[in-house]
Each structure stands twice: as C-alpha cells, then as structure tokens.
View 1 (cartoon, rainbow, N blue to C red):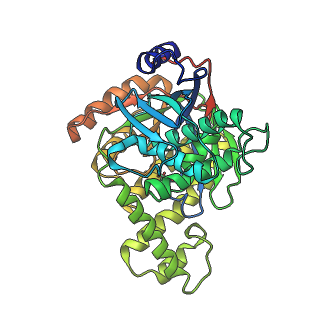
View 2: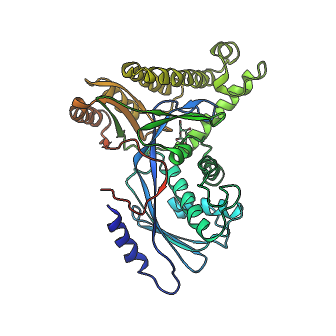
View 3: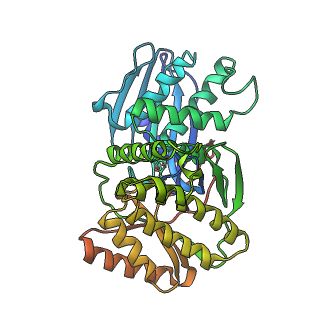
Length: 408
Ligand code: GLA
C-alpha cells in the first residue's frame, strides 16, 4: 500500500473534512526492529545490538475541533474511540488500541492537553511476532502527538525546548513506561530505543545500564540478513516474559547476599557457581552473563569484518536461549536449526522475546533462494506450520513522512 491508497482509505472512512474537522493530513512512520544479539539482557544492565527495519507501521492523522480521538487500524479493521478528557484506562476490548490509549493517558499526565484527532494506522509488520510491533505503535503515536501538539502549543520541557527536535532518548523511556505500567509487560528499553533511534544501514550498540550508545555500520558484504516468522502464536508470552525477569531479580538477590553487583550482567560465572543452588536460577544467570559477553565479542569480530565468527556467536546465542533461558520452544528451534544446517548460512538465532515469533539468519546472497525453499520445507515437515520470510533492510527510526512511498 502506498501513501495515495492510504489517504484514499482515510478519506473513505473519515471524509474530506467538515466544520468539526480541521487541518491537513500528516503522515508518520515507525519501524519494527530485529535484535542481532544480546537477548533478554536489556533488563539486566547488559549490552544489546538491535537494528531498525524498513518494515513498520504508518499512521495518518488529522486534527478535529473537539476532544475525541478516533483510531482505526486498516489491518484489524477495528475502530477505538477515546475521549481525551476522560480516564483513558486500559480495556481488554480495545485490543491494539490500548497502545495509543496508553500513550494519550501518559502524555496527559505529563501535562499535555491533547486535542481531538482522526488517526488511521496501517502496518506491514506482523503482529506479536517479536519484531516490536508494540514498541512501533507506541513510539509512532508519541512522536506523532508531540510533533502535532508542538505546532499548537509550546513543547513541554520534558520532551524538547521550543523549536528543538524531539528528544528521542526521552521518547524511548516514555514509551517503555507505557509498556511497563499501562500494558503491564515489564520489558526493558531495547525495542523502544531502537524504534526511536534507528539509523539506516547501522545497528545500535546500546549499554542498557547507562543508555550510552554507538552506531555500528552493519555491512554484510555478499550476505543477507534473512528474517523468518515461525507463525507460531506466542502463548503466555507476556506472563513468561515477566517470569524470566523475576527469576533474574531472584538470582541477583542471592548473589548480592555476598557481593554488590549493580546488575546480573556484571556478575561473574564463578559467583553463580558458588552461590546459586537452584538449577533454574543458575541457568538463567549463566545465559545472562554469557550473552553479554557474546555481544562484546560480536562487536569485536564485526569491526574486524569476520562474519564467520559473528555467525557462530548467533548460533551460540540461540543455544543458550534454548537450553539455559528456555524461551525458544519447538517452532523457533526447528526454524533456527534448519537454518543453521543450510549451505551459505553463517548463523541463525531467535530474535526478540521468543516463545514463538521470529528468527534471523545470515545467509550468502547466492544461497538465499535455496535457503528459503529448504528451510520452509524442513520447518513445515517438523511443525506442520508455514514459515514466512520478510524482505527488509536496516532502516531509520521513527520519522514524519509526508512523502511516504512504500509498496505492500
Ligand atoms: C522484548 C522486550 C525487550 C527485550 C527482548 C528480549 O522484545 O520488549 O525489552 O527484553 O524482548 O531481548
């Protein structure tokens, strides 16, 4: 779908404009993300290495004269109505609409007096597939509201001072709060940070303890990053995610009876062996500590242009997430293992929270077509499911895009 079709859909639904409606259409885009390596350590003070994609979510917005926000998703064909003077509380029946509602509620707590809008969303990012569709809609909606509201009233101090660009680090922290406290998923900051600060052809090395970050050119010289969806529903993903996070907190508490680690990523493997008796907690801690080491090694080998070593680290990361962190499950394992065996594949691993969702593989360009065919066949045979493969490059973080041109 391109911008012209989206505008047509918008006018069909919300009309060309009348006395209750004012202003022009404004278009915004936020990407999905993959995490290259550094999984489940952004809430343990570790290093992560995500990259924004060129697939994502687009929104078109137009101001209204009243205090109603009408939200419509072309993907789910569901409309959600919000009264910006009301409570704007989470309601199960509002489904995806809770993400924008959470943003509106939290913005109003920041002191924004939001006006009315008609907003239409459309995305080419699979929902709940581990490519950060939730961070994309949160960051997109917040960025859009801050941009549009700042035209109306002076921007508040917490975001940016008069006329300055939106503070994207603030933006990602704000959206993480919406995810944690409104949606109820205790996620780290990686997804929101990457969606807000992504850069074309670069991955972001982010220190989640200090939020210091560095853009690392992601050049694959003859190789492609293949993104694959298990199409397996992520059952209990949110509760399992919160459970892993709690296990990490318990492991750290045991270690800190004797030591004073700032976070689990700074602990040593020796201390874990010494103090953690419970096998489950020990394995969780081992994943966290070794995964952080793998990210540091990955940056090192990438900077030397050693893609073979990088691929091996991807494989090791998957293994650790499977055996020690237990967040993969049969479909993700089937997809990653089938990928790892293919000619021209340097490495493959799950990406994101796991429990279903997506995996990535590093594949030699000339092998990509055969790779997809073979992986598809093995995967279907093992699981009875059909894998999807997404063509996507490394793209920019959230932006306003009046000239947006993308094909469905
Ligand atoms: C989800 C969360 C992130 C991160 C990953 C796992 O995507 O939103 O904060 O914890 O899982 O690495």
